Image (tube, each protein chain N blue to C red):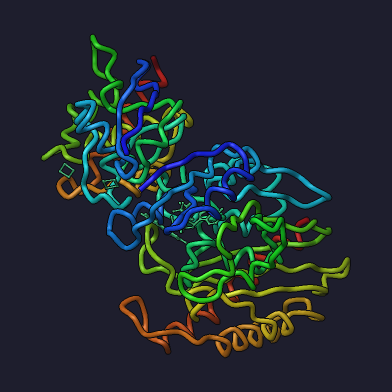
Length: 157
Length: 286
Ligand SMILES: Cc1cc2nc3c(=O)[nH]c(=O)nc-3n(C[C@H](O)[C@H](O)[C@H](O)COP(=O)(O)OP(=O)(O)OC[C@H]3O[C@@H](n4cnc5c(N)ncnc54)[C@H](O)[C@@H]3O)c2cc1C
Ligand code: FES
Ligand code: FES
């Protein structure tokens, strides 16, 4: 039986209907047309579906849509401020930290969560924090460099 | 399937107990949702426990700690007092999955999923933790080592929920540690896990110890013989060697793609010994 859920998504109050077995990822993509979050595995292994739920980084494929009632959700769609890209997004582009791009929204959301709590992570810290995000294309190195250089730029700003 | 998110424990118990079909509590969902999506379980009712305040709190009680069963790994890691008193329990919980999984995974879920390889369980057993269980007949306390009945099986009756994990008070010169062996550095299932908790007297002699192992039997196991090898010693080479042998001797592992029986038996001794060395170091420094 579908139920009505009210949540805050990227700062907006949003109401949606969902089935009890539907995941938050399905709701975002199929009901709300927020297709930035990707489904790589559907089992918590790849991080392509990463979103913030009440300030915590989570895999939206392992959250039920119904759990979102009253919660605050941030997705990749809320990352750029409308005029310009977030420094992380810019550094990913400038440093070719993506190829096919499937993993990119998840990496960006996860990396932002890290920099919001620690503006100066070491390379090792970045690698551990992002261990739940898989990329089949880049070999990770460029992603890690992009995160570190975005962090450096953000500290100067 | 129905979904309910009650705000009181009583309401949750009533819902779970009253369901004629299959009912499942939901904490972080990092096991349950994977199983749902794989079609491995098909519940008629899911009861989200995360809106029940008691399930989400960490409280200092009588010198020990009471950790709500749905508290996440990330929240445990951010609790300085708990980390100081029980570093082994916290490090074991923090090993569960990635940052994303840590944002959801709970001690209650790790225990109730009842995997032989669950990382937090040997650490909780070594810590002499007991869980508070609430059900239609009221509350009871169960030592963690008696909670898991077999792979995927617990001692919970219909309608029962784990409410909290209780960690006892910590005397001076006490330390705990958990180590797991996996072939990579992150995101893998334990080949062997070892938890050790011990207490030293003022002269550095071990007065109390508990050793528990994961992934080497159908359930995580307490190994009294390994603890006995430490008690009355100062953790010297001979004591550590005997404790490692006792740990290996207690293993009843299976052969699988992660490791053979012989390999697990050997590694269990090595991990138990290294965990004991860390626990000793921690106990000496506080
Ligand atoms: C990518 C990934 C990596 C993982 N890595 C690890 C790892 O390294 N080590 C490890 O040990 N595990 C790992 N896990 C498994 C899982 O994350 C843990 O077992 C976690 O602790 C489960 O907690 P949860 O709150 O998400 O449980 P849930 O999925 O919500 O629940 C698990 C089970 O317990 C029941 N349950 C939950 N809470 C209660 C309660 N309070 N009372 C009664 N029953 C309850 C549920 O009905 C369900 O059957 C991993 C999982 C994923 C997806
Ligand atoms: S789709 Fe969620 S972790 Fe892969
Ligand atoms: S860019 Fe293709 S998976 Fe990462």
